[in-house]
Length: 163
Length: 144
Image (tube, rainbow over all chains, first blue to last red; front, side):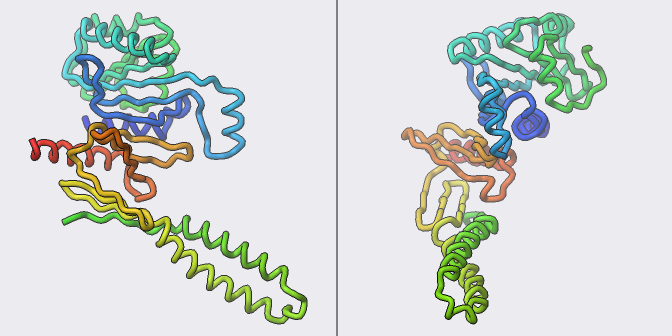
């Protein structure tokens, strides 16, 4: 799993993730109330290239939304646990004024149908959900903008796509 | 036995070399016309002086040396040396700065912060952070 976390962090901070947000801070074992997220990436939507022109364009054209990406590795996930994660993230987003949030869940066992249905039907604008099982290569994401966006950022090995 | 990481940054030396060369070319351009026959020698001498001086200035002011073991680490930049113990670390963050360089920011229990410039040390920031977390965990376990 450490390899997968390494790949995720790398892709989000210096790879394709930069098309979505500029993640500039990463913290391991982030504690949010009684939950521990394996990785929390913080960033914003002011994507900066290394040239002067790209910086000027970014400054003038792009909005500055705070973006948080939570990554959690679990053996299995229940729908109650998922709802709890979502509620805590939304609460934190409200307190810290974070406009875009992503929650990436990596499970070792297949997720129950209830969880998959919850993710597929999740439509809130400020949170994108993605669930991935590296063993069965099953991947599902929420169908809102952020869910679609985060799916394109990471090249997971896939067998089954949600849509 | 402390492990040492101290790569030479040729890009920093090159930047200093260019600055010194520009200064010397400027000096040569304002020399009286009578010295025209020795301009070529002055420029060749200038290159040699710039190479030696830029390397010397780099070693004295910008060269980074990082030493670490299971107890703590030392970070030496030029003449400034910082010594810290791992067990005093409360939080470890991986930070990407404005120009794409990575730092590992250690929050210490006294409210201090130390940045380890991993990109300048030519280390893989993601893997080295995981290694540091493991060292810090072990160090805290040992000290109870």
